[in-house]
Image 1 (cartoon, rainbow, N blue to C red):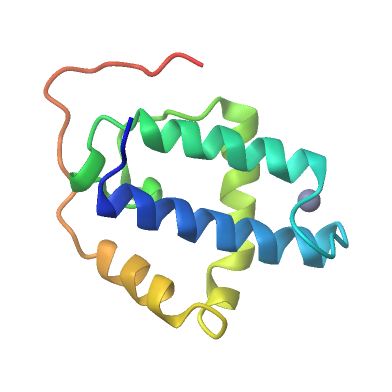
Image 2 (cartoon, helix red, strand yellow):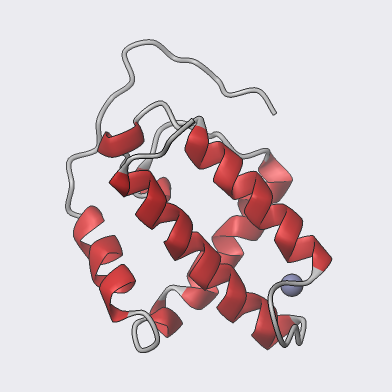
Length: 116
Ligand SMILES: [Zn+2]
């Protein structure tokens, strides 16, 4: 499955956030620790199956709860921690993410839950 620009950028954003979070919390010097690597892998697969794709709202505003509850909590923690901290190392990604918050949130016509 080839990703559109929006999903590709979203993947870069979450990968950058995970890297910041992991190096500060788990001391990973290069790349991610095993736990974060598997969480990132999960997040990327969720993005591949996101029903909105190029119309995707920021995850926070989305009505589809595509993460399993335990993972959702961890991803939220990563975003909360790394969001404000990635402005300096990743100004373009951060700006994109800020702009995305102003997008209208689309409604799903047919509810389809992604299966893990
Ligand atoms: Zn980690």
